[in-house]
Image (cartoon, rainbow over all chains, first blue to last red; front, top):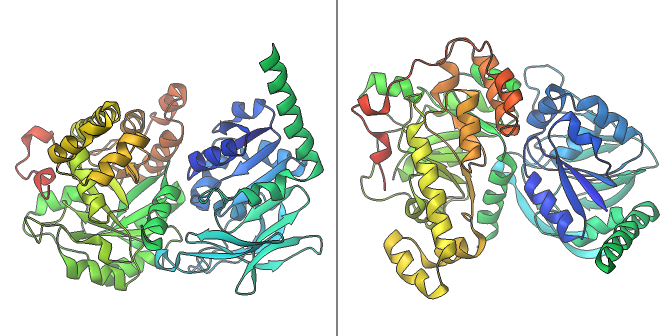
Length: 213
Length: 290
């Protein structure tokens, strides 16, 4: 399985290490030509959404990434990555009255950035995720999902009554950071779907073929 | 390590690959955010002006910092004087995202730094070599930056500090385990942190470059030398076209390996900050706090 990691800003090295730990191969997406490679999964890491969103546009990545996401490639997004995907951004940050910018708009949820306040509001907790209990969750100046905009959206975890991770069609997105705690079950929530399972098996076969040669 | 320390290290991880810019007004903060800054440093005078003004330089007015906090959604940092516990407490009270215990301001304590483990708010500190970096981390800093020589627009000291730190890290990695005790003594650094460096080949926290970065090429150079992101102080708002220069430096940090793009980014930026040769200055800020 090959994972393309958006590497314009933020914790992309952590995201790559996370997917390599799950047995995947990874490559970095910094410019348009990086998208010539095929991937089984697109990972959007944590960082600052305003910076990532601007760079995605400035570096000519916006249209090809939108095509990929809308085309159905598996997407795994955390924190800033979720904000880039959100269909609606309700923001306390827009104090000057300007509407916050929206990016891919591919995921039918509304989010609020910095919903738990500044860094002093960052926290760790342990909670239920996708049927598993006691999963550690790290929230760093995290957004919250304030509304679900389609009945097809599946809520995978909650905190204080708000969804903190969701799955919808090809997208799994988190307000917290499974990659920081090497949370395997989060990867499984994406990988265990039939389509990515096939891709994983394909990589394993390639590897065993290479090994026997 | 308690949760707070880990959360604070995590925030620095989210800033990686980014540019943190010095700003003095909400308008500048907006320009920086729009240009792609991953955080801003709120201060009343940028280092170049601190140099020009002389006298004692202190923490900025909290009202001014709050104005910047409400203007942008990205993290806001602010500086306190080295060893000034009360200034740090004040910055924590206004919920600053990161405190820079900084040699740019006049030190309040000429021997000790703040015990940063006693705070919930994160701290970034300057360092010129590995020993200094590990001492600050031992005191609770969750992010390190090179000191460079602030307010000069001369990158030579940042290069010197980054190269020194990286070569000392490589040296620690090469040692036998039973040689680490003596190495810790020589570095005057906590043994457990020296062991971490030996095992992982890096600092236990994120390491940015700072001090004298003025052009996209300067930023790319620092990334090449192992920085995980850059602080740009006087370099942006002392230049001819701050918005354009800021955006160019942001892209240079992301694509520091692409020299064709760097060439394009370096075109028509207008005059860079004039700068002062680091050898010609009288106040050596990097000497403050060791």
